Length: 425
Image (cartoon, rainbow, N blue to C red; front, side, top):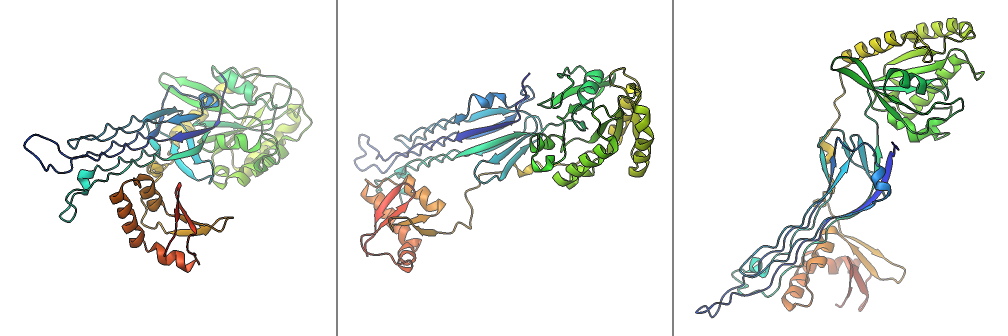
């Protein structure tokens, strides 16, 4: 199975349906009032954690997701049909970020958890909604509100109980192959493992834990050297770290120095990660040269107050003792409570929505305000009453005074949303 841990997608929610402008026309009712119905709400784009999805591979080939638009309102105050939501299945542990700002929008860590990543536009109001004591026969209705759209970065963090770390070729792949059904590629050269490998380790009837073979880290990984950032994030959520070193120093490196350098990278990347419980595992003790390094590793374990296991992944020596110890340690660890209620995103209905006025290269004025942009998009300027209503909102927002303060001149263009207006005193 190919493991894909990143993806970039574009999502677009459905537009709201247009409101209807109509009047009641029935026999014996010569002056029926307005009866135009509201448009339906546009569909949302929703991410949902699915236990049957394990990677982000599908997003390599399908990168655009669009929900359907709401239906238009009709006569007799009939509402338009709501647009159908676009449901996107993602794996457990998916982190959702805004592609432009890098802001974390949702952290999906529970099966079935959902996050609305683009809200559908609300339906435009029909003319029946604008009837009042002073406006008995309104002719205008609103267009539907445009649905939200955004480019998202999806990033998968493995949700493993135990993470294997260490320099390349210390035997991590051999260990996970020996204790689980995982079958990673194993060879005598660095970075054989280019993607994380998950293995389920059985502890007996109905007892097991998930172990992740993280690709080899090297000095400078926290700065992105080697495979760096691509894989450091995968051990952020592990409960225990098995720190493997090559006791036989097959590559000529010092296993004690290797241990210290890797821990420096872990602490530089995340202080929280550096405090994870660690177990020092000296591998390849079946080789004769391992005896020379074991005393130094025993001293290291004593200094760091870490459990030390001397194993051979090749001959399976002491593997049962290691796995049983890890299982007992996992039972004693109190799981961290991760906040899930931070999933509410795209809340555009904010009270602190200031009006921002800028100038473009043509010395024209650009007015930025989400509520104003929404009103512009939903106004039918071909209708005289709709135009008057917008002019009233313009005055209520005190736009003339704000534009004059910025030095606007007669006949200058003003851009709001996708429309251009010509300003006159």
